[in-house]
Image (cartoon, rainbow, N blue to C red; front, side):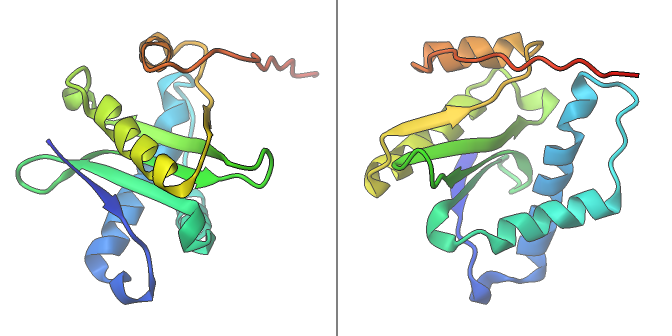
Length: 157
């Protein structure tokens, strides 16, 4: 697997970059389907995610991909600097294709993010994990992340 950071700027807004952003947006928006079987994603959801990525200031955005030997994306990590707390980054999404899981791709993508954070003077990385995603919680703890708050929701009928 090969890992690389994607730098977005006006000059690399080509078809290949757009297709990669579409794949990232699809994966990001389909993630809830892992725990909500009837979850539906619209084209508008995907377009909104692409715009959100493109509208993020270049210096605040970190996106990296894991690609197989044929250059096909098999996963990604998307993170942004936060205004509060300062010197903090939030991982907005991390996804690895099913056939590529448990081979170190998520660990390597998080290592790329950590390297960028150190260069940027970032002191903390935050993330959220669905409570059913035991593999990611275990990986995060192995990498030194400390569990925090658990959000709970009740829908009133």
